[in-house]
Amino acid sequence: MAEKTLILVKPDAFARNLTGEILARFERKGLTIEALKLVHTPRETAETHYAEHAERPFFGELVDFITSGPLVAAILSGNDAIKASRQLIGATNPLEAATGSIRGDFATLVGENMVHGSDSPESAEREIGIWFPEL
Ligand code: ABT
Ligand code: MG
Image (cartoon, rainbow, N blue to C red; front, side, top):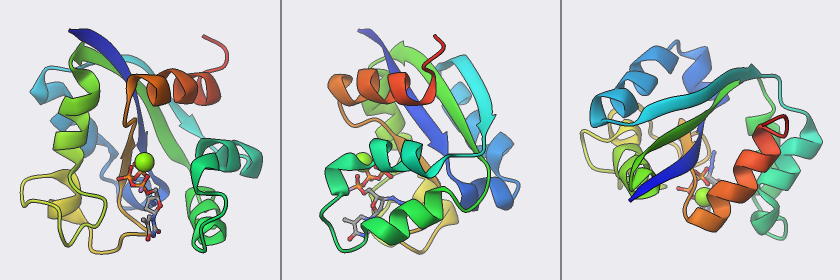
């Protein structure tokens, strides 16, 4: 089933010059880049993106982190793009993410876990609207 997903190469990954490495993994899987841009994220955009975590104790740090530097936002498309991307990204906690996944290979902190991928079709539609309102 062809579908779209929203990916963020987060500020930690961008600062470590891993953007190309990460996008290459999605491309090798067979996903297609439909849109791509560098974003200096306004605080309001980050708060909207992570609205489901607004009441969590880590929300402030999460927004601080995602606005701490530029990130790269992308729309990817392909067969089961949401599930395929989440598989490539790995578990939320990098210490539990499989070796071979992006988080498993490159991260150790749950609060700085390199990449975001939409977790459902509803999330993908909502998040594409947040990061690519011009489309
Ligand atoms: P995202 O792709 O960033 O949404 O991560 P994922 O969907 O794998 O995990 P969720 B549960 O959505 O986490 C959102 C961000 O919150 C961070 N987080 C999460 C913490 O810092 N502490 C926690 O205890 C939990 C549960 C990790 C995620 N992002 N970052 N950066
Ligand atoms: Mg999530």
